[in-house]
Image (cartoon, rainbow, N blue to C red; front, side, top):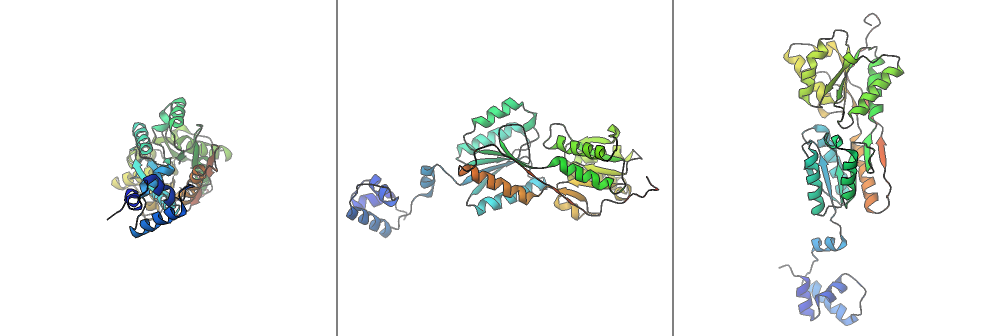
Length: 342
């Protein structure tokens, strides 16, 4: 049987408030003999405080809400796992939700999580998030009474964020191809308002300019980060004979190109050198393992949890924008183009 504070009070012939004061070691004028009697009875009954009530009284739940746009994307699955591991190590539990890349759904989830008493929100924003007007987003964020951190995204909003350097990542990827003799490099960018898409496109352009190469609009294609969009853009790239290399804003769109090539009996690995983004787990087990930009998920998770805990402990009050340096993972999908081929 689970005894309550009321049971202890009845047996000790005191009020429930007296029992609460004694068992929570609060200052009071209760006589020492009465305090000892209350503690003795509580021990005899094996009384255990209601953990939910204790947390409620402290206005903490040790639960953190985590929202991602698409858990079927391996990048977000790995990020979710890394965040959850680090939260558990810090004594917190993760309340997870998938927004299905919907801004409306994000707002609903955040309000629901806050109503259930989470201590903070980690939001990996959907692509729809940045389609909203900045003043609308800022008003929304200001209305939340719990700390919120944007993850895998940067913005001009007055909100803390943790992201990796997308511009630098794209520069590194483009120069990997340039350094192997490639000059006609196709770039598959995300849609203009997609998370991180403009920065990756900017990095591609910066690398071309740095290496005295002109931006050719015919080499720029657009996708939506899915395998299907890579599949649809594949024939357009194959139809341009001068293109020798492909840089994609994520690995999934390269998978789409590979899928199309296999279905149409094209040797994509012989025709193109390729570099992707995200270091998807499958990039190293396909026929020709892909060179890709790794976003350092572990570091992103560490920095995020450190920042969140600092805010919860009142150690961090100002808006912070943490940017993590990416690294390139070199595999076998980039070939050197000889001078006679250029």
